[in-house]
Amino acid sequence: MSAFSFHTTASIIVETGSASRLGEIAAGRLGRRVLLLTDAGIRQLGLCDGAVASLGGAGIDVQVFDRVEADPSQATVMAACELGRAMGATGIIGFGGGSSLDVAKMVALLLGSEQPLDEVWGVGKARGPRLPLILVPTTAGTGSEVTPVAIITVDADEKRGVSSPVLLPDIAVLDAALTFGLPPAITAATGMDAMVHAIEAHASANPNNNPLSRMLAREALRLLGSHIETAVKSGADRSAREGMLVGSMLAGQAFANSPVAAVHALAYPIGGIFHIPHGLSNALVLTAVLRFNLPVAAESYGEIATDAFPHLAGVPKRGLAEAFIAALDDLTARLDMPQRLRDMQIPQEALPRLAAEAMKQQRLLVNNPRPVTEADALAIYKEAW
Image (cartoon, rainbow, N blue to C red; front, side, top):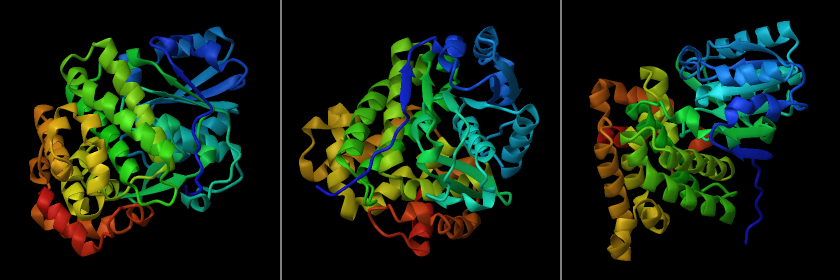
């Protein structure tokens, strides 16, 4: 067995309703001045009200920064840091989707460390320390609560990542009640994002691809595959929502240690340039990338096929990978997700620019089972168009 390392969040709480006792969970861990980072929609819906009240009841002074946007910008990170410094924040809470959690990671790092932002981009550059950090996801998709990665948009449309175990929070709080009100389209897109994490982690060419990550990826796909349609169509189904949240977390643990690859690399320019949600961007290129990878990744895709889709159990082994890819196409159609790049008003003449931008994601492309050139990326985008 090859040597590997495995890092994850130190403490994970899975309990429906747990956000309403966040003060108890945070007591003694975050200090007395806490900055809670979220977005305007979460704030307006009142999803974080119970958590803020609980923190106040525990004697913790809370200030809320609710200006996190989709594909959060470097300017947002710096504005949140400014508020944190002004209040003398002793701890950070990220409350929301992946964008809020990523911003919380960056703010905790930058406020707790002497490192400037320009020194932390990339893999292993962030040294810390960071401020104490708790993450509370409100979507079942990114798995950001258990990953050492934050993705930030710079220069208008380029996404950059910070990857370091320093970014892993002290506690992740998984409260399925926070996801009951998610609209079907968001549930579908975030759920597919989680499935992509598991698929890419299992097949990753990264030297740290390991038995733990592969095991977690398979269990994640079992949970996600069995619950995603119910969660989309019956959003208040507690069992489905809990299954999706735990599946997303397991997929996050998998790809945090066996990193994602070309699906994400090709999805990032779609989100950065055309402002399409990340989960949907992944779904739009997913099967085109998997077909490109088939010559070298069929064994991996065949191994996970029946985890996600038990009905494929009778398919002969030689055709299982292809059946898996077809089943993913069928799933996104049943979830009423857009099927083609052109369905999102992405013009065909933009594809060369997307391919060129995807080449900037070398930290991801090196993990792909099959090398991807700019010409390959363009061909994949054309197939997805």
